[in-house]
Amino acid sequence: MRRRSKYARRGLATIVTSAIMLTAIAVMGSGLVSWANSNLFGHERNLESSYSTNVNKINEYLAVENVWFSISGGNKFVNVTMNNPSTIGLNVTEIKLDANGIINDKTFTNQPVLPKNSLSINFTYTNAYPSKIPINIYITTARGSIFTTQVVSP
Amino acid sequence: MKSRRGIGSVVGTVFAILALSTTVGYITYSMNVLDKYNQSILTTNQNAIDRSKEQIQITKVTIDNNRFNITAVNTGNIPIHLTRLWATNTTDPTKVFRYNINYNLTTVTPQSKIGQSLSLIARTNQAYDIKLISERGNVKEFTVNSVSTAPLNIQFIALPSYIPSGFTTTLVMLVTNNGTGTLTNVTPATPTNTAGTADSCGTPVLVGPSNYNTLPPGSSATFSWNVIVQGSITGMTCTYRAQLQNGYTGNYAQTVITIKEISFTSTTLAQNSGILTLNYTTLRWSEGTSWTAGWGPPGSNNIAFYVNVTNNNQTQGSNLYISKNSLLYTTTTSGGASSQAYYIVNNVTKTLSATAYSCAGPPANDYCLNVGPGKSITLQFYAASVGGSTQPGSSKLPVPGTALALNLIIFGKYATCQNCVGSEYGQLLPYNGILTQ
Image (cartoon, rainbow over all chains, first blue to last red; front, top):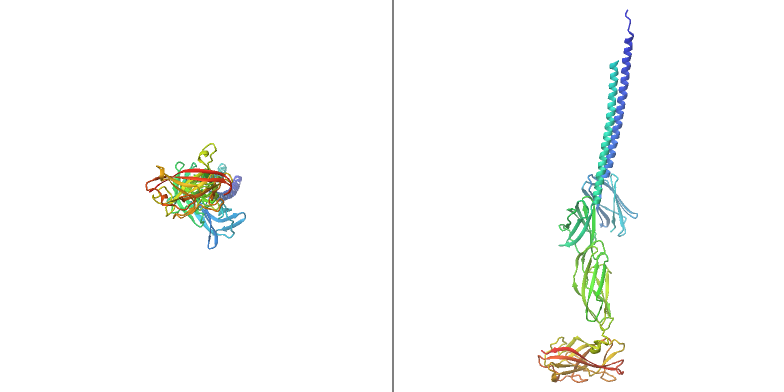
């Protein structure tokens, strides 16, 4: 009867152990790499979003060309003409007139100003202003930028 | 065993490469994003700097052919592109005009005629607020005002302000634009006489100019008039007021012209010229039809005269009572019998109907008229004899073509009343002449 070699048993165990270890390492490594990639891609997306938001906000600019007051049909109204000299479009969401606490506020949902274009907005207001006093005008965009100017009441 | 150890190294290396490449990729991406962010910041800053460097100066605004003619200068160091013009009629704020324009302002050449090609009609009697918009979003605002918008600095002076009676002085009106906007249509109204004690405050006659089309800020417009003021006493005044046509309410200036007669001292001309003066230009004659000025009455007719005489003695109470012997007489250039006397009368009409020099007195019919210090009086001459009221045919003027000197002899007395004792005074007043036609 032929005796079984002790080396043959030891080789099998080593192979099995190695396979298990390799498998474990592969699984753990793949998971780690996947996790790292996922984490980094998430950071990249956040960075991209943050970059876009900030850069667009920095780049947007609105120049108030003219503001004039008048009366139509018994209603007082103001016309604000804005010019967008920048390279990105913007959306006006609010125009506020404030003269020593006399406030007229108007919000909008869709008042886009394309790059290198202007926009005139007419709106009526109810709180009258004394004649020849300074009125601060605040124009807010969808990105949260606020542009101000000052005019004199009619 | 050696080959199995190699597999582990390979696996480890693969993972190491994956980890490194991921990390390097992330870092590279981050750096790129940061770089783009920086570029955006730099671009935005550059735009802001360029915007702040834009310097537009309006050097001239006129109204030519009923349109604005604006001259703008780029005083900065970068080119400027003007893209829009706004004009608000502040006289009628409902009128707001917007025009797209296209002017490149270099730093070298001023740009004029801005507004000449627009359909906007500029009215000189109205005020405008004008804005020029640059492509970078800057706004250059200025005003073009009418004179009614705000009070102006008006100065009004007489040069000279003290004049002898009958002399001409010059009224000068100086209008300074003390505002920040250009003024349009600066036209003065003729100065008006608002007060005064003088005998005559004449109507000012414009010397020029009649108006200024535009007046830039800080500039002045000068207008002048000539005016004649007459008064018999030193200290008489005429007050004139100057203002602009359609000007701001209550925006005017006044000046006072004062009569100051030239006085002669006892050592000079006064000793020889006497105290009475003849107002030569007031001489009038009538031959039965009308009172006429000039030196050419028709000859061979009866004639009456009147003329103004001034008592230049300014002493209080020095009234000159005029004697009935006072007369106007004519002498020909050849003298002799052609002389005629025309004695003083109370009144004579242009139809030669006279009232004798008469009064109640005492003394009756003498010293009837008197002239106070510094005052003037009109004396009328017609009678052929003292105290008379008629004129015979022999008193007619000589035939046509005869030159006659008119001499006035005033007899009187300086006294405080008709019957008071006073200083007798007689004076010959020559220098008028006529030539019969």
